Image 1 (spheres, rainbow, N blue to C red):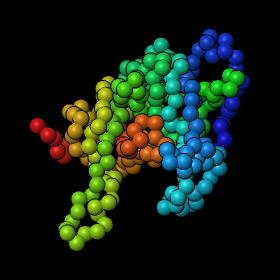
Image 2 (cartoon, rainbow, N blue to C red):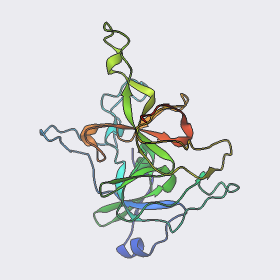
Image 3 (cartoon, rainbow, N blue to C red):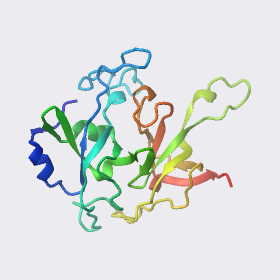
Image 4 (tube, rainbow, N blue to C red):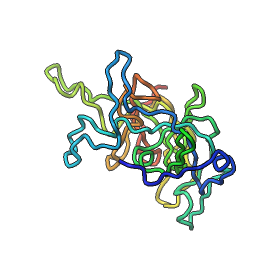
Length: 246
């Protein structure tokens, strides 16, 4: 999938330019194209080509989204975020601006593929809406933003000793809270409200109408954790804490 727009800019443009409202500028410092595993197996593909059958949702044999560059480094942030419940030009929710220059952020596949690109020399920068960013890392510290939670995957419990299928299937409506941050303060849609009473380690259930998705699709290309994949879940879609260790 080609970029919607690429613009050649100078270092002065980058330094002195003013960001669009509620946007973050990031440096795309990594590409998986042509990359290989530690054992030398090449897994990188050209992400501008469609490899899987787009008409077949079960065909995920080689999906371009597996290698989408969803991680980048923050180089410029807005001074503040704009929220007005009566203005659709603002964010859909009110929250604090928690990012700093130098943070590594993770965003969604569609946004990272279609974002406006600024090209300066051999470096590529993208303009990402703050509201589309799930989390950041500042050193080893994970910072969850926008009311998002990362959950460890939970497997379907084995029905019986004779069951040979459920033990390797992952639950699509529940998980274990691994990382959480501050809830959003309020939403433009007044029916929405973040689930407040959450702790790391809670087993949670989310709305079955919400199709949970992964922060990154493959561990071999992960920049967050190359040993584990995590569900991205908004607090407002959580309906219950099923189990909590006291």
